[in-house]
Length: 409
Image (cartoon, rainbow, N blue to C red; front, side, top):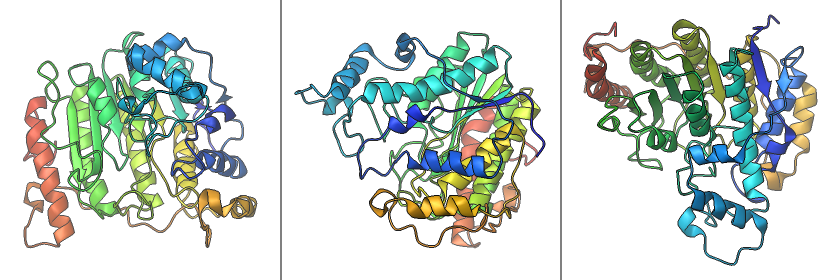
């Protein structure tokens, strides 16, 4: 496999300690299975796999309040006897676990390691599959996310040589925590493509959410209808994302690559395949190559089909970052299938028939959006997708000097 020379994979087994409970849907086994699949396919051969460097805990204050950080420390100490639900801790989404602070900080340290390597010119691309905790807010945990590693890394980059950063979030859930962090900061473009917020938590991310008074147009939201398949999802992506990113002219792209948009994900209602997710990853890489000299920091995110989806999607992500793209027809190694089959069912559920290849034969071809695309008499799914696209373009394009009716924009 050819390799992109200026790339690195950030990984340390310590990230596997980020585990809320035995039955929580975001089990770190998905990370272990991803790294094992990447290794067995030879993706990691000759690649710089970097252990996260130590970082100053004060960096956490870039995205979180002192009292919240103290609450997380107390919660994870095992000695707390106080109610911490006001900090988003101790509920079904974010159960308290021992050493919560240390485990959450390890995810931040990994993403910061990649950011610092790019800023120093040591690498052009970096990936941390354990990152992408995009729901964490300044003063409370949210949606399985304790510390917002992407927001902290972006804040650090803004203080270390960058003044225009584009954040692109393709998780099925709205990237609300990162959007909130930079709501009124004109230096950061936050773009989120997600399931219709009328139907999916956190019920935010409407096209009318455009950023604060000093940063109008730097929040870009593209909802898609529930059960949206590959072709319509990719039509929505390409109808909005490249145009606004090109016009913003970032120096670096940060991508949150949650793969809970898959049709079999138990927590969402989209209908993408691994092939569609791979196409989105490659589109973001191509955009980074086009507009910011390849500088690309990629992180993971959601994804709760722990065996069949996450390992394949994020192995494609790692391969894309290091420039060793994997053909979706590539067979899954028997050794990996043996590992997956050996996992306890009370950890990963009933595994069933394991995937045979790195793809699923998804239909990733799409018809580009045009002003005439919206036809109320067309198939309901296509009509709904085009309606969302038109709304997103109408809301944000004029704020970037773009014509929402011009398909070339």
